[in-house]
Amino acid sequence: MRSYISQRVNAVPPSGIRRFFDIAATMPDVISLGIGEPDFVTPASIMDAGIASLKRGETRYTSNSGTIELRRGVSEHLQAHYGVSYHPEHELLITVGVSEALYLALTAIVDPGDEVIVPQPCFVAYTAEVVFAGGTPVSIATKVENNFQVTSSEIEACITPHTKAILIGYPNNPTGAVMTRERMLEIAAVAEKHDLLVISDEIYDRLVYGIDHVCFSSLPGMRERTILLGGFSKDYAMTGWRIGYMAAPPELLGAARKVHQYTIMSAPTTAQAAGLYALQHGEEYVQHMVAEYDRRRKLIVSGCNTLGLDCFEPRGAFYAFPSVARTGMNDDQFADALLAEEHVAVVPGNAFGAGGAGYVRMAYAQSYEKIEIALERIHAFMQRHG
Image 1 (tube, rainbow, N blue to C red):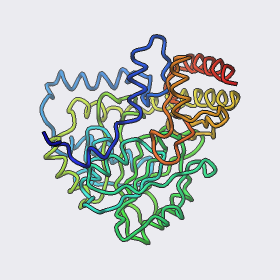
Image 2 (image 1 turned 90 degrees about the vertical axis):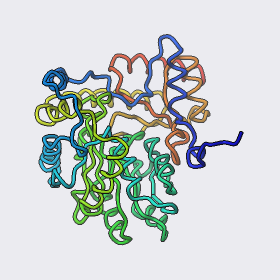
Image 3 (image 1 turned 135 degrees about the vertical axis):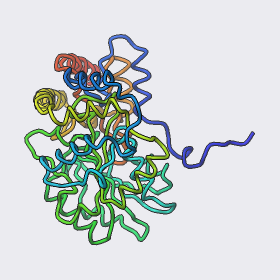
């Protein structure tokens, strides 16, 4: 019997993250520094807003674009924090998490043969979604000496007549890198010079430490060529609610909404009510979580450096990305052995693409106390392996 699987799907390997989660799930006493999910429960008042929506009988579809109330809330949020304005009716779309927004953006703009530049290491879905959309991902390996910030010269060197877009995600998963405004402006100049779109995934926009987040579409001249992706999963500990958004000029937004209409219909009604409440009343929770993540960040980075796992300072998200070079192991060997011997789960950096080999991702979304125990186990592991 012939294979019925598409070549595009066959070309994409399974996620390199899942293997470690699956193994860890079968082992007792595992401390997982692998999963990129807040350990906080969604704040009670945000949950109550979702429950109240259900009790009001709001269990039907919303508009394809999402409730107008939530779109207005997102518009006000972006204006207040970043000074960039989007029309709630024509330039905002509520999605099933940022993952759907990424799918929509690429499906809406990519034709067969189009190239999308993807700086790596990056979220595992970026490259795969370019392929699923029928495009060709063009990888750029970012470097620790540049604090894992992609440079405009690296991007420009990859541009061909087939290049249509640049896909960036800062604050970055897995490195925790944050782009400076100066570097963002340089990338903006390249996008304008070569008439490219920029898809900017800013799901970790509020989780930054001692530095301001730069919203790409707020840069001069970039609003009209940017597809901005954002959401509620990380900032408000709402991963399971599956609620995100896309902001873009009307033509781009309309194309993405067309795909959304035929694929999804609308984002979860209950989650939209909770998301609106989060935007309007959730700032204290965001600040509390940022402060706690910052405390954990300092612990894990100093701990890794003390143990000989050289780690640059992440300034956003909740990931550390230490090098395992001093151990003499590659990242797969290190992650496998650490899980087997000390029951600590980390993710090999190569799972996140070019530039990730030789590093591991450690998520400090675990509690401070569990991170302390994990570091003690890593210390024993490092001593055992010299």
